[in-house]
Image 1 (cartoon, rainbow, N blue to C red):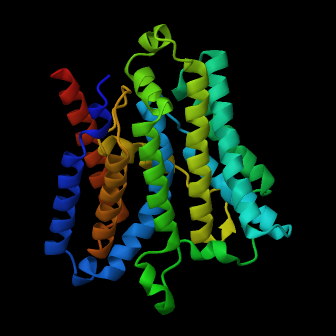
Image 2: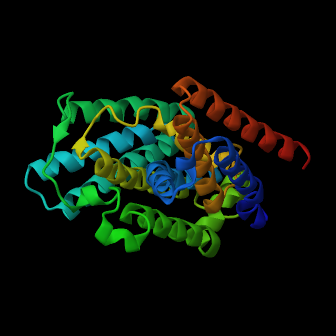
Length: 317
């Protein structure tokens, strides 16, 4: 598999982002192209973008993870419950991320041990994890004491304007660099591409496919757990019903960014651009006063076009 295929395809999504931003700058209200709105878009992109980085690894390896939204909800519940029990903020956040990692590892084990396709396994765990979150929270929101976690995605105060964007956005940038480095410079990253391109060939070349799949899903769960920390920062409560359907946005960000649902292709930069495209569309539509159903139709149309272009590109190979 040519490594360039995992990095390529970013130019198209980037041009799409510039076109969408230019459109709303021209036809939208003046508030759209203010720095305050840029900061808001960055904050809104962080949750989806964080989970989408983990999904990028899964899709490159030829899988899919439909449980991401439920894992985010579980993470917020775990964090809030532990903060309420007196845990320090860092420990509660780490536990929320660990819960996501455990869910991802369970997905990987079920897929490799039961030999069931990822779509079916993660569709089942979507409901299982959501039910677990509701059970832990007794089907209600969990209030938690205020800690520094709420500052991760809070609007910047005058004294912290030097950061330009909230700390959570910088954490997303750091995570993107780490995932990009993993894909580009490590054997694990090369094996992900190999398995996504041809699992049979990868096995013949000595790749421990089952172990790699477990690792990839554990990493995806970890990213979703970290996205749960970001979601908790925005909500300041543990909500077992939050992020319902968010897994579709996460998958869409990867696909819009050039990732292939056939496996073997995807990029960190493309995924972040894909997440930004969806956020900019929603922000622009909202500021123009368009109803939610219009936003959903536009976003859905972008996803369909992105998938169609992916199939067209592969048909020519």
